[in-house]
Length: 480
Image (cartoon, rainbow, N blue to C red; front, side, top):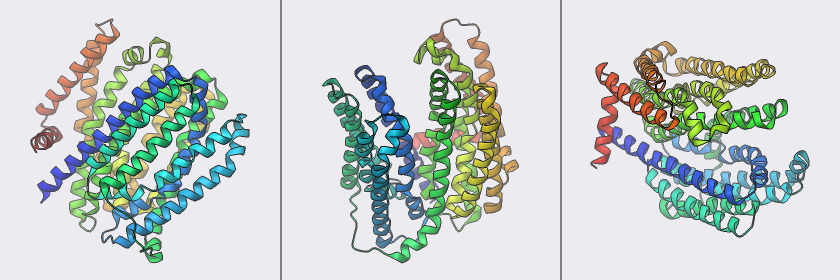
């Protein structure tokens, strides 16, 4: 049974990774093409709306899909209740955006944002219709269905966006891309998942899940606002060029760790929920997934740190070289995401969203305080402050994990120390090898091969169990 769950989880992780990374790769390619057809100012208009859309989207989910996954005895009434509630919230969120559109346009001094906001905001209602389908995908670990719907949607919507941009639709080509992607994905999820709401709305069911979901809603809202606060504050204090350097560095630094952890935690969440009442098994599961996550995330983030300059020069051109120090510091900061994400999840699994919310409030108070203290000294100090914040974030959430399942921070550090040491040694040797090479492209190639070789050799030499586990899981999946 344990072996079946492990293989089932691994399959879920693989398909979850296929869905996330293939979709993002296609989106990146489509955006590069669109950037050649549409003026930067049109991209800027959509970016201005993004913070409001993201905050509204936080309300649409409301944390109820997590509550549904976490609930042990799920009924058809639970599914229908959450569906109806989410549709109601998505309509309410859209109406707020609709009437706030003139205020948003006035804030940015861009009259065209009023109509754009009201049209783009329709995506909230469309996405609100598919929340249950996505929850069922997670519960059944059927990420293959999600991968299919996401890939088809992003390809067709991308082609529509490129076609309309070529015909001269400007910013409306981006709007068409956004809305068609949301609509196609929702339709395909209904077809593939084959779930439709029944006439079984239950106020009792809503109240039961509200105590869990509402705290996740507030936590998610705090995190969303905090994440967007840096760009807002930096934009007010420094030049647009500085904002560009910071934002681009932050996107690159967060993409591997945040995306990988989203893939892993999304796949293992329903599996860990099955162990809810078995603390010993849950702790064992936690340690296994913690070390496995670190084994995957650590080497990627450390290699990004040591190869930042050649990567930036080759991918973004040498015009972006001034952003290298910011990228290196932010990569170091995001190393800790592997630990933070696993600890966040264990509180959700145990249903302790009250502690999750307490931790989130405390972390954001610390984060805002650090931002206020560093903002006047420049971007380097802001990035150093983010490293300090992420370390404190890890410490705080580990303290709450200790309360919940008796897993302390020192126990976790002991488990991940061999992986951390192996990653740092591999990074150090890569730096030495890259120092003898002048070509940026060859620095990336030689540095990457060296890092991978040293990392694998050291993992085998020190008998890091995650290496054997990962190779066995991949072998099982490929032969299935």
